[in-house]
Each structure stands twice: as C-alpha cells, then as structure tokens.
Image (cartoon, rainbow, N blue to C red; front, top):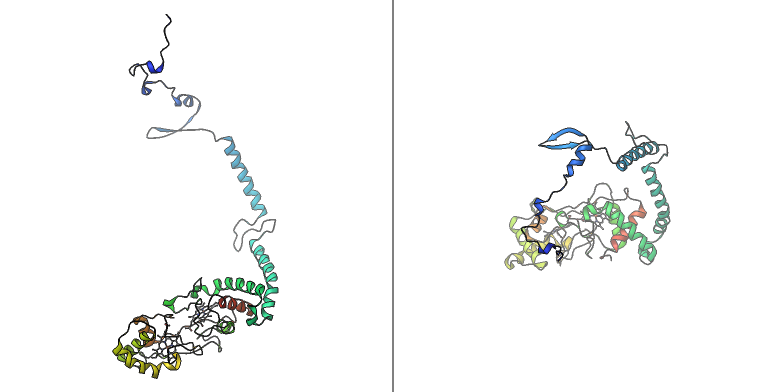
Length: 314
Ligand code: HEC
Ligand code: HEC
C-alpha cells in the first residue's frame, strides 16, 4: 500500500524543523561580493560604498538648476543695501503697495460717503454702517486694542475702560465718542482733549486717614457692597462736601467732567477697599492719546461708529 504523505499536522513537534534551526541564505553574502566598502567601521558595523539612487541624483540636479534660474529671475543675493533685483523686477514691497493702493482707491468712495454723512445718520444707512464697522474694527485692532483689549472689554487694573457696557465716562452718543477719540483724554497734545482732575485727597492732605476710611465706607454702601454703618454715616457728609460736585449727590457720575458713577458695580479702577483707597488717596488721572493727527477724519468716524455699535452706544 502506498504510503500516505505526511501532513504537517502529523509531524510530532520533535520532528518539525524549528524556526531557529532553519537554514536561511545570508542576506549580506550577495552584497558583500558586489559592493565595495568605504573602510569605515564602528563597533564592527561597516559602511558600504553604494551609489546614490538615480531618481535621487536627478532630483538633486534639478534643484540645483532651479536654484540658478530662480536667482537670475528673482531678488536673491543679499548685498550691502538690498538684495540683487532679478531680471523679472519682482518686488514684494511694490506688490503690497499696489494692493494697498487698490484697496484705498476702492475704500475712498466709502470714506468720502462717510465724511459727507452726519454721524447720527450713519446707523440709518445699513451699507455705510456695515463698511464703517468693518473698517473701524480693523482700525481698532491696530490703534486701540493695546489699551482697551482686542474685544474692547478694557483692562481694569490699568484704568482702561470697557467700551462694551452702556456706562460712559465722557458720554456715549456717537458724536461724543468721536470727540473723545479725536482729541483724547488728559493729554498735552491737544488743547481740546477732555480734561478733569480729581484731587489727591490723601496725598495733598485734603482729608485725613480717618475721613478717607469713612468716605470709602460710604462709597461701599452706595455701590451695594458690605460696609460699616458707623463709618458710612459720617462718610456721607464728607462725600457731599468733597465729592458730590463731580460724582453727583447720589453717586451717579458726571460725563461733563468724566467722573465715573460710584453707585453701581461697574468700575474703572476697581471697587475693592484697596482700589477705592488708592483712587481717593492719590487720585488716578487716566490718559488717552488723541488721534486727530494719527488717523484721517474718515477713519476716526469709522472707529467711532464701530465703538458706538459695540453695545453701549446711546
Ligand atoms: C494708551 C492707551 C489708550 C489707547 C491707545 C486708546 N485709549 Fe481709549 N482710553 C484710554 C483711557 C485710559 C481711557 C479712560 C480715561 C479716563 O479715565 O477718562 C480711555 C477712554 C476711552 C473712551 C471713553 C470711554 C467713556 O466711557 O467715555 C473711548 C470712547 C475710547 N477710549 C476709545 C478709544 C479708541 C476708539 C481708541 C483707538 C482709536 C483708543 N481709545 C485708544 C486709553 C487708551
Ligand atoms: C474734580 C472732580 C472730582 C472730585 C471732586 C472727586 N472726583 Fe473722584 N473721580 C473724578 C474723575 C474724573 C475720576 C476718573 C479717574 C481718573 O482721573 O482717571 C474719578 C475717579 C474716582 C474713583 C474711581 C472709580 C472707579 O470706577 O474706579 C473713585 C472711587 C472716586 N473718584 C471717588 C471719589 C471720592 C470719594 C471723592 C471725594 C472724596 C471724589 N472722588 C472726588 C473726579 C472727581
């Protein structure tokens, strides 16, 4: 009877060739015959002297050729005052200024229209308002955001007011906002800058420490925070004598002198005891630059329209 061919499964584990015992051809053997070595050897690892692959070599030559052509056509080599020009005469700076000029020309139509329109009327013209708000937003990012914050929420620690709420130091109509931006606040550059100066009640000895403590408690009371009754009562009298002229009898503030309201929780510098003490002892004197010479009037109008529609415009 013919012998049945043994299948793998029939082999006993002992007769099966174990992987470690198999004879594989030495992969190095062929290479070693054909390829020369460089002679470098590190810890027994030797380096073959293989030629570069063709495709690699050609790519390399193409990049060299490309570099030479590029250097001839475009500005390339840095020289003393500027780079070599390149025969195409291409220049990113002139490309950008051509773009800017193109944009300015197409925007000029709108800026002219903005200049010719009464600021109060801008909101009634949706197209013009749209343009002004867009242009104003980019002017705001460039000129105003370093103080007022990118989102115009202000920085209380530095006395940069939020422009999002409907509380205004100097008035929130579009004309008042325009005026504030144009000449700024408490700067020496413009005689028309908005101006007022709160006395430094502690530093200049107008009130003693005890009186300052008392008036602070009255301000805490007015602004709806926790306060000491026994201090706030005499504080009220000090307030009416020294502060009400600017901040109002009820602490409602006065946009005529840029005095902030003290009867709510919106603060320019802060409503904690320490912040109030600092405001009253030293006073503050927040300064904003004017923009009449830094921006064209149409740009000031655009940024005023932008600020006005942020939320709190009156
Ligand atoms: C160097 C910082 C600084 C820059 C830049 C600046 N501001 Fe001001 N801004 C201030 C300060 C400080 C005040 C508040 C001054 C005060 O105490 O009355 C203020 C106040 C204002 C007010 C009045 C707010 C109110 O409640 O009446 C408006 C509006 C305003 N800024 C808009 C702008 C616009 C728009 C720009 C950019 C074109 C700008 N500011 C750039 C610092 C700055
Ligand atoms: C001549 C007007 C004037 C008088 C008087 C005055 N203030 Fe002011 N006060 C201001 C102005 C303007 C500011 C805005 C801050 C600045 O100068 O940058 C201010 C700011 C403040 C602030 C900071 C408010 C905030 O939102 O952070 C406090 C608090 C304050 N005053 C309290 C007082 C008290 C209390 C008195 C009386 C003892 C007083 N002020 C008297 C004009 C005045």
